[in-house]
Length: 527
Image (cartoon, rainbow, N blue to C red; front, side, top):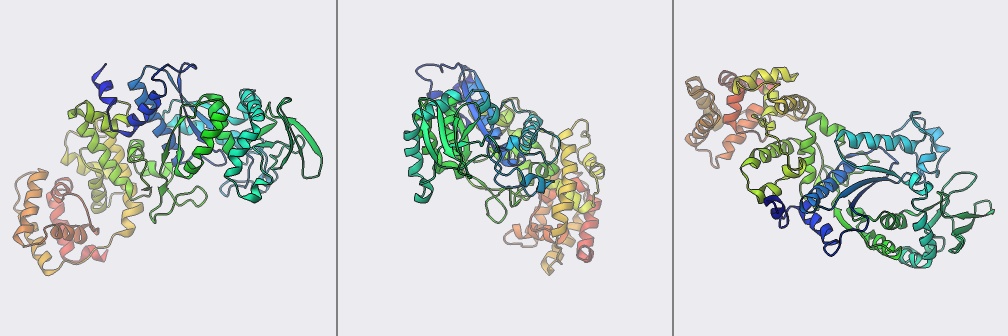
């Protein structure tokens, strides 16, 4: 057994803890189907979003962790619930009046408002595949419509007919009395209108594999449950899909957690062991409210990638998945810098530490070297004081600070410089508030300026930091952090900032002297 595999068997990193739970399913015998199946679900009533990314990313991390501790082959299925009836017209698409004509039809029978694909479901499925392919995920795509219509689901649907009463018992316990009167696990698709029918059933014939119902005009219909003429309600569908495919692992958000016993019971009734599952906490906005697609109060994938790398988003997604996290623009700079801190730490770590490092899971063990010789937080402050409009201006300062760096040799730094300019202009600049120094702060700033004028120690960040530190001590700041807070508020218009010695080294001694003079003269407050 390799050192990494041995360490993985005891690693406390959550992907390995989950992978070991999956492996335990097969400690006595390998899976009859010949592989372990991971699944993620997608509701194609809207475009894929940051939650979709997180779900597939985290499942992939567990899959890769499993592949380190076991030689059993694996598959990952991305399952699109595209047979769901369209309940409402999304507010962010064109041709809404035309879409309203198709309410309650399965999404793969709904007009595509973009007029690019066979249906709205096909359009959103294509967007999902493009989305997943962009990030390099390895997966197999499954469409519920094809799954039902192709006959792949027929055996399970016929078994659901046989076990109808048992499944209904499970479902009825979870429903209000009023809903119980009309509920059925089967939803017929009307042969003439093509709409998904939410109607009580008059008969379920297990021998024939059919259901009988009256439509809203009072006409009676009998349909086979096979061949895509009937679909399951979404909760029974969850458990039935697990049984039909032999799913070993699926994760979902906390909002599904109360349904887990229902999904599991139905899966077992249909003759299969329930899979392992992992419930993750939901994302919150800056006010602590749950992020939702309809209210648009979160941050999108495209928005994150406007200001930072995919890897920084993956780092954010890795962190504490069972803890609710605020997902808004302020978290981006920290995610970028922490990701690179972990990259720099990785080469010196032992096997146990490596497996606990998020970058192992982000890069599946093939961890690149960080070329971020300037932290993202520092780049933001540089963009601020230099009034940079593009990353070329930033490179003028970066080259002086790190002469061996260039956009070609340090592509992650080059990308981050461009991200920093955009982030500064969109989020930092509108909120900057400069203030005048107090008498104590003015004396200290004049002292710092004079020491910089006499400085001949080069651009060593640590030596400059020691000098800034010494000025604060000499002027009796207590606690000393009040001195650094003053530097940020007077010179940078913010209440927190970078190590100031590193900032001087990056911005330049002469430029820092001019910045201090501007702060002392009230020019920064003026605008």
